[in-house]
Structure formats: structure tokens, C-alpha cells
Length: 295
Image (tube, rainbow, N blue to C red):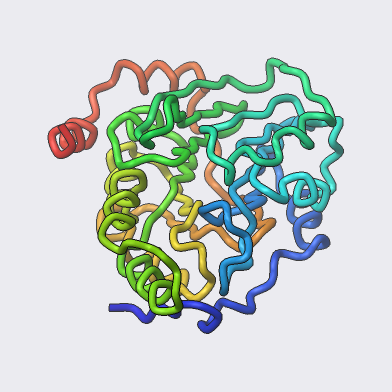
């Protein structure tokens, strides 16, 4: 089993956020639609030992317009670091009402936003009890499509929504590391009931191996693992990739530390209208197998 460091140790605990200049340079050099991972850590507690990831938030930039998905703590400052003007924000989307996804919605929305016709947005209800509804989103831009699972157990609805997409950003749970982390917290006096906590997490979230299966069923080009649980830094990127790659053979990106820009994905080979029509009407054998697995 790959080595996992719990607490303040580990090879990645000192990994810094992407610098302001790196983020801005990546955005200025990249062409077409860009995805910036403003925050990639799961959970609402920013003081967890060994954690440097901000809470979940993303921004997609296309044709000079910005679209924000989720507003975890720090989203306003993280957005400012990108160099994208706040006046470019056209829409804000929230996957569900948990504090690590919506706590800074109020401050951010005060900056103002309006809808436009630059993107086609669709959504699907996902499984994240007891929150209802919890949503996954799909954004079809002129040059690529990006899907976000939100927080969810592994379900067919995400694979169906993401069918044929260029990028699937999916939450990921690494069960061995979470178990080790929780046992470490209990040993240090945290009042956690191990079995109950683990059962809750496995009902509410997606083990990384299942994420690979969903990406394979959807036929996406690139899988981005984000909202990483546990959100500690001591888990090697290769550990996440190896688990997802058991079922998905496409490109796998482990969402970098705060401010990472996801780029260099293949552009559309077909128009959005044609891709959209095929996604709705064309049978998908992998989706059929996934449906059989989870029904």
C-alpha cells in the first residue's frame, strides 16, 4: 500500500499554494476556456493539522467571462489572486449548502454578477445525505465542457451528466488514509466514534476507485480529482492517481494546491450541439454497466 503521512508530516505538507505570478501567467498564456482550482480541500475546518488546501471553490474563465462554482472560505481572496477582474463574473453556482461550499457566498456575491449566453449549464441531483438537493453541474462552453460532481456518493447520474465531457472534476475519498487520519485524531483526544464516522463518509462521498469507474463510464477525456478527503497534504499525488487508474485509463489530474490552473485539454472535435445530441441519444455500454452495479 502507498505510504500515507497523517498530521503534520509527509512529503507534501510544506507544498505551497501556486504563486500569484504562476496563476496569472498560466491564465494569460492559455487559450480557450480555463479552469482554476481556487480551493481543493474537503471539510469546513481550516485549522486541521497538516492542511494547506483552501475549501472547495473553482472558477472557469471563457471569452472574458468568469463562472464561479462553490464559495468555500477564502474564495474571494483566491479569485483576486487570479488577476481576473471581479466585473468579469457572470454567474455563481453552489453545489449544495454545506459550509465548505457556501460559507463565503455572501461576501463574494456582493461584488455583483449577471447571467449571459456564453455557456450552456445543466445540472443533476446527486446523493449527499442529509442535504437535499445536492447538485452536480455541467458547463458547455464554446470550446470545451467541464463537469463538477459536487459532494456525492458514486452514482450513475454523474456519469450520465458527464458523458462525453472534456473534463470531469470529481470529489475523491481515499479510505485507507481517512481511516488512519481518524484513528490518529482519536488517539490525540478527539471525541470521534470511528465506525459511525467512517460509515457516514462512505455513504456521503465517493471512494477514489469508484470515481475512476464513473469517469470511464462517462467517457471523459480528463479526470480531475478534487475535494480530497482527507484534505491533509501527506498523501502523494501518485497514490490518488493509482487508485483512480484502476478503472480509468484517460488523463488523471490530482487537483493541485490552491490556485492550480487546469489547461492543455483537448478541444472539441464536434460542435456543442452535436456533442449534446449524442450525449442525450447515443447508448453508452459503460453507463449501462455502471447502472447495473449501483442499482
